[in-house]
Length: 89
Image 1: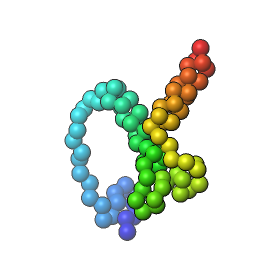
Image 2: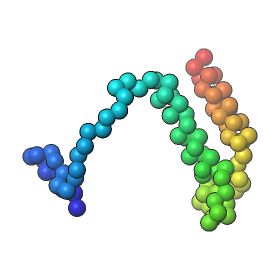
Image 3: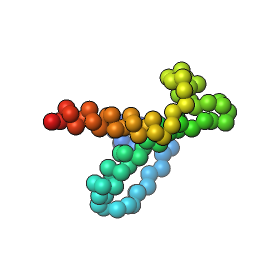
Image 4: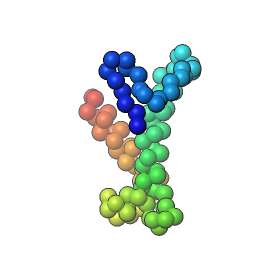
């Protein structure tokens, strides 16, 4: 069990280590990551049939009644971008 004490601000039973990495992260890298993560979640939950469920997780949860395709995802994304550009104008 890890307990943090307010006096020392250290966790009992925790190990700490310095994480070294790049000092500068480009904004294009962050933008790609911000774009890729939701797409992967969508594909995992709506497009991919899972072996144990024999359907997509979204279908198993009752969120949708059909298996989505990549074309459906692209159409949804284009509609979102269209609405966003109309609001900005």
